[in-house]
Picture: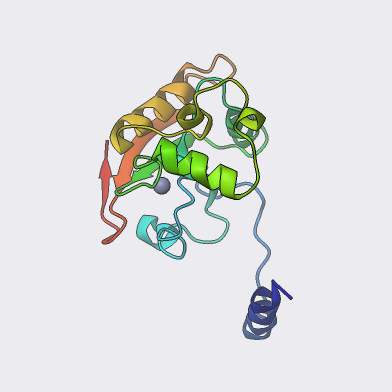
Length: 173
Ligand SMILES: [Zn+2]
């Protein structure tokens, strides 16, 4: 089975954590962190930011790209109005794969997977994938999208940061 490794790990986890405490679904530190889904941040970012279970919400998706029209802003609104989030930190990272997107390779990969170019519509393919030129500017764009969303309150504390993928060092943007 393709997911046997995960089921095995889950059995071990359950055995090692028989009395896991139940946390409130609202984050104790009223914090939402938005970061890239880069696998090098997996198992690192929570510790590097000092976030434990129940402390914060964590959204992770490709490139932590958040445009003004993004559907993800709906989840931000849920975080604010239903889960009582008061501060949001957008965390970009060094060496992000979405900076290095090669359009030709992308098109070749789609073709190799048997998917036609027109399945992605009229949009330039790099834009469709959320590719960008600078990790830092991409973080600033996301922060700006949250700050200017008309349905989010001005009282929100919103900031951007960059994390070093190799060392875990965090710097505010
Ligand atoms: Zn990334």
